[in-house]
Image (cartoon, rainbow over all chains, first blue to last red; front, side, top):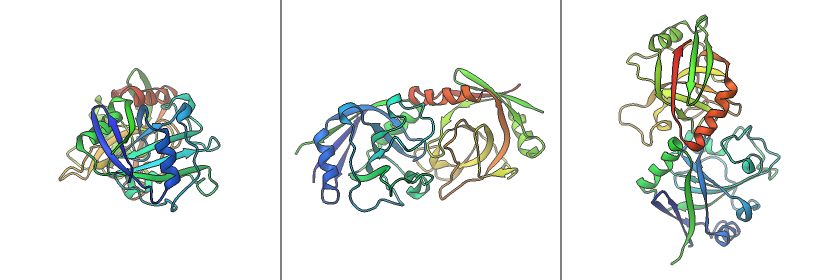
Length: 169
Length: 149
């Protein structure tokens, strides 16, 4: 089982990839690492931070694995892609390049809203027509308190640098 | 018609209170003015900014809606888990006053839509709020102040 490490403001968390369930997605993520950028806090999905992928790090992957509807659990790491055809309203908090098409890692660091359903953004569809892709590809082994607090800090103090790397054995 | 000046970070806007349809909540809100608290951006409702208020008595349900829209000023009890990193031991919800500054928003509780006391409408300056709030998401969220206008 391959492992990833997330570094945020001096805190770190380790995740295991779900190679056995979504091998192609895991390969694509693994092959593009390391990646870093400024993480922003969610404003719909509750305790989630997002790392928008840009430049040659953008991933446009097809859906893989079991349909992901319903719940999201603390520690979930989700690959998310949204077609430029999908509206999320104005995204003035995002850099201009992310306001339509969006490729990101979503890191759920705590109890999600509505038992996790809010993370699925039920007001929008598009999943069945491949206008958006959400693939759970890794899970944090645990969520260190200092890492969770750093995630929470983003909400109040603004963007923070997040680094995602391979954790080599 | 009572007007309230809302100052968020470096911008301000004005709201008119709906004293006809929300007489108890607006009277209570006016008694608290001026309010100056750390603003918090919603992490579960979309484009919502709010402050947490300390009120010993329960604010009654009044003029409620689950269909909030841009410019709505509302008061409601927000599940504490959306405000604090962990569930507090004895407090399950916190009284907040907030507003919606952009579409793609819906106030939600733990298991679905959450009714809010609609107490007024932002009638002037919503565009300024709609630019300041996202800026704060990127650069850090400051204070919100509500004054009689």
